[in-house]
Amino acid sequence: MRRLLWDYRGQPVYPIGVNYWPRRTAVEMWSHWDPEGIVRDLREIRALGLNTVRFFLRTADFADDEGNLESEALERLEVFLGLCREQGLFVLPTFFVGHMSGMNFPIPWEKGRDFYTDPEVLASSRRFVQGIVSRYRDEEAILGWILSNEITHHAGKRETHTLLSWMRELYLAIRELDPRRPIGVGDGADDLKGEGLGFPEGALEGIGDLKQGEDFVSLHHYYSDPDPLRLSHAPAGMVRLCDIGLPVLVEEFGVSTGLWSEEAQADYFRIVLFSTWAAGAAGALAWCWSDFPTVELPPYTHHPFELFFGITRADGSEKPAAEEMHRFAQVMREVGATRWSPVAPQAAILIPSAFHVNYPFRSVDRAHLARALLEAYASARMAGFDVLFVREPELPPPDVRLLLIPYGDLLAATWRDLREWVVFL
Image 1: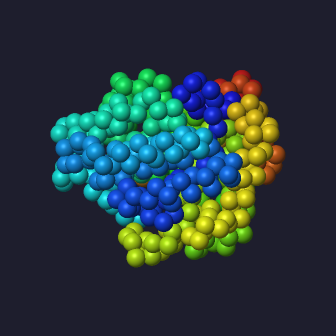
Image 2: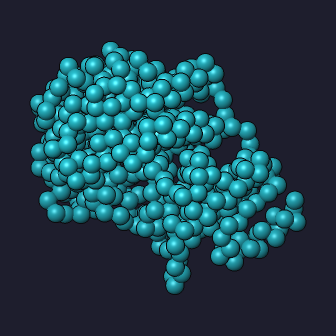
Image 3: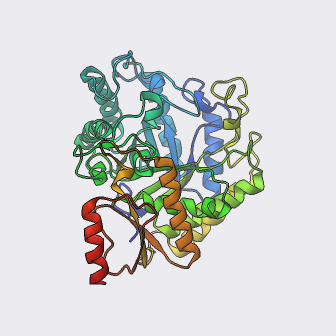
């Protein structure tokens, strides 16, 4: 079934949109305030038929070194939310923006302390988040809240149970004030993709414990692969791989036309948009709205390919990818994106627990294993099977008749249960 996001009034929404920085000011949106340029951007976004923008409260722009909110930034945020509301756009505000496009920015109250565990840092983080939520919890344009932008790039990768504790702390801080809106982490779903540090045996009941700190999965998909078939099947495969019983929002996806041709970018957008919807995704947001003319502005000075991820060019003209998003949005309106769910898959792929768990005296190349899981997914799809992933020690549901095991180093109990499962079939 498709797990959905719901708006303020309780209506299902399939977000189709972009991650947003203004075309003219990029990451300096709040410090180089340009309401005229923003209005023009938002009108163009809506004209493409898109319905959602994810935007970023760059933390240093919005708070002092105790997590108290800055009045000028709040005034500008008030204007921005009103402009989005006028255009009929949902928004997904993102709180802790200490990393963006290949550069780390300060989180003022961190002061060299542990961002995830230091009590004073956590208290300031709660103050910052609750100050925003209490002020805007009745804003109908806000579809949900996102805790961070890839926080591990700023504060470091940590074992899953440490990240879960931080997620849970801030999740509850929001939930105290807003009982309705869904909350995501904005972490890119690294732990689910096998890109996190994992967790020690016994620290968690299972990877599904992440549901204690999020209402939807924040999948960031920037996948490279020399195999074109695996590359093409990977977006849908990642949606299935990240399914832990929550909506999976493709929160970021894209390619830079500094590295790809514009035609190849458009082809890739078409693949991602349609295949992830067919796989049961809860929505898709491109990275990003526009190319930027800001060649003298960090991080673009030293990451120039970051200037060219837009679906529109720096001069305001549309790339072919913009037309792909427009066409997809039209199709979704015609068929009713939230009305359709994938059929129950006939086949399954077993994810070994070692993909997430750090067992003693066992070494697992998780990047290699992730590629093997996606190879199994692509092979099954090419053979005509729809596929789900099951996580060890679980086994497939009764209606599944084919189980693929691309990694054989399983738990002893799993081998026993597999024999029983085969006999049962």
